[in-house]
Amino acid sequence: MAEKKDNRGLWEFDASFGLTLCGVDEAGRGPLAGPVFAACAILRPGVEIPELNDSKKLTEKRREAIFEEILGEGKAWFGIGTASPEEIDRLNILQATFLAMHRAYERMLAGDGVPQLPQLALVDGNRDPGLPIPTRTVVKGDGKSAAIAAASVLAKVSRDRYMLELDQEYPQYQLAKHKGYPTKLHYELIEKHGVSPIHRRSFLRKVLQEKEA
Image (cartoon, rainbow, N blue to C red; front, side):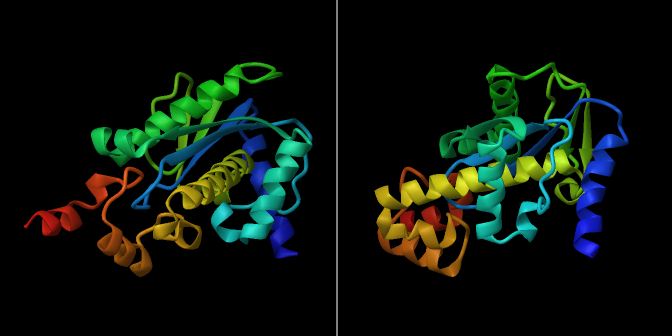
């Protein structure tokens, strides 16, 4: 019963604004490799996604199922945006995340069937990315807002799938196991094989300095 009550609360939170909302969230700020992903989502009125929640509280299997439910049943208008490792190194991770969020917002609006511009963006966290509409930041918003929770699943699954593709190109780093995150295994493989084009050099300054010494 508690899970259902919490899930209803996601929609109640969004409905309390009385506006057309888009939820915005990111995935992949912490990894040593790969892009940072962001998603922007407007849930269709009246939709139900019974097991929707913060993507971090869902199993990989459940995230995949919700992702396919959103896509296959058209339960949201959404866009996915990314910022590359090169952009992360050039801008810093926060600004690159904002860039990915802007791209996600623009791609959502460029998609088919978006009924109108959202009146408010709910963004997970406490930093405003500066989208061209009124914005409210929501700390731990992926556990409070249905729109943010949907964006969190869309961003997380999209990034995980992309990292599996990179695993085929760079099998020596075993990306399928850690998705680029800073695990002991990942550091060991970087030490063995070096820093690749998919790595964020600004996250690996100590490793690079040790190799240059």
